[in-house]
Length: 317
Length: 283
View (cartoon, each protein chain N blue to C red):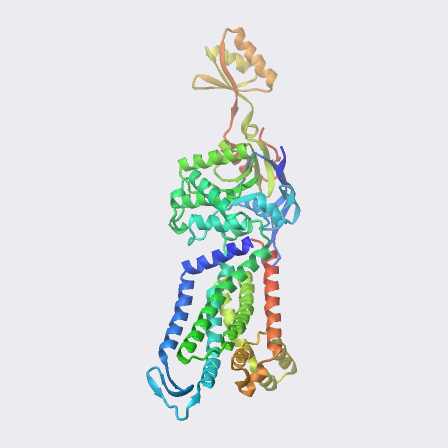
């Protein structure tokens, strides 16, 4: 997968007004996002998510490390030709209509009027605000403004989308629609999507990989299913499950929990698990399901954020 | 070019939506209407035989040459227009940078593949176009009214607009600089008006230098005089320019390159500084 967003050793320190105090917003983070990938950037407030995105867009400058977009250093305005950005709490001028907004920002992206018109209408239809095309933005609801913001970001068919809370203020149906549109962009057009959101369930549903930031450092990184898999914990569904079987499992040192007719087993290793399966089969038990137990991304996130500072920086696996 | 067109569209639409454009041209139109209805001239054989100002008879004892009258009239009027156009222009454009720098808006502009210098200069040119259209409207309308009422064509009056646009351009550069630094429309307007009056005050710099007790104070006044736009001299230059050889000697003396060059240098430095600071600014 060709990396279109490359962040390496990125550092950012903010200085206080009198230059006496220093705040480290980013402390040497690294990640890459490939073409067609959906990547989630997570972290509590002040973790450095927005700073990362701002450095990618040259809205603010790194004090160390490098960031590249589509192979170009982020200080080069040309790097933004391939980028669409939806900032959090964006303020689209209320005096403009959607058509005028798209015309102004499309031209600033170097688009021709006819392309702006064609692509703009196509996007507004997809985002279901095409009927409002000639209404001033100040009349829009928050969700509609958010949809228009997304249309502005996607107008010039960028190869990278940087989205800060893209579904903020959008109703559940709209959220699903936006999710589908973004997944379409990634899969069909190979657009790399970097999603910065607090809605973890959404990140879990949408993103291929995530990075969790905390105090300017990446504390967890990987595929969502890797991060959410609980180590050596399995769901064991079989018939019959009786006390004798539970006792037999416990005798091997496994931690057994009976939940709604099945068992949740915590074992030492895969070999241990296989030994338990052999025990069950020897007793004539019919196995119907054996699968790893996963946490939600929210559980993982909360664990990471609550862990004391200086705890090992690794996925909770 | 597309960036410039986009900025012009944005600036004009914002001016229209925020009533700035309407107020800008409405005030100018009122001024033009008052001017058109206030003056009634009675011209006989190319000379002024009688005149009414705001409906009142004006004592015209000797028949005055209408050309001379128009010249004197337009010269005096150009001074009023110099102040009016400059003040309206600063009021109508001082928000251009602070509004763009608002949180949530600046991200939308800077995430485009446009260099920051190009962005701020496009906005500056868009502001100049807005101010220029008003100067053209005011000066052009008054010129047409005078022509209609007197049948005298005096194109030098139109050229006064160029000098007025020049001072607007320089003061707008200063307003942009303040806008970049403070992100405040109110501060941009106040400081630019303050600079205008400070420039007027410094026309008497020689007398102030003589009045201060310490040498360094006199040196400072002199330095400031050379730095600050020569707003008084340029006002005088507009009048002298319009009246050509008919201007009083004192005014004619002001029609030199020096105030233009030093004011241009001030404006260019302000614009370069505004662009540089905007480029370095973190949002």
